[in-house]
Amino acid sequence: MCAYNAVRSPMAEALAKHFFGKSIYVQSAAGKRKGELDPFALSVLDEIGIDAHKHKPKTVEELEEWEGLNFDLIISLSPEAHHKALELTRTVAAEVEYWPTPDPTIIQGSREQVLDAYRAVRDGLMQRIKTRLRS
Image (cartoon, rainbow, N blue to C red; front, side):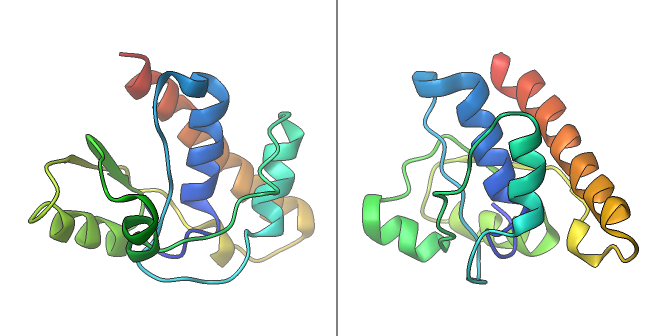
């Protein structure tokens, strides 16, 4: 879960699905909708052979409406998402973990500098996901 389901949480969802396939159920969502998946996020996932082009950003409310919130674990990646995740524990029996993850959209500079920020987020999420979900 992240603020807009356009960068960090869709990257985490794509990575988790790539490494763990159907052995776990993974969905990403946000407190607010922002439109489409960020093109830089798509680019850095493409670089490692992960296709997330079909991802459609969704809110927690939309996810609940479509399929319910039957999760054992909610991982929040931004302060806003962490607050929302803690609110959800009033009605959802899920463990919540907060993985503070920088927002790469705030980076300014050349295209390569921006991509490096997205790569850093991708690589950090990949390492945490592999470690946490392997157990």
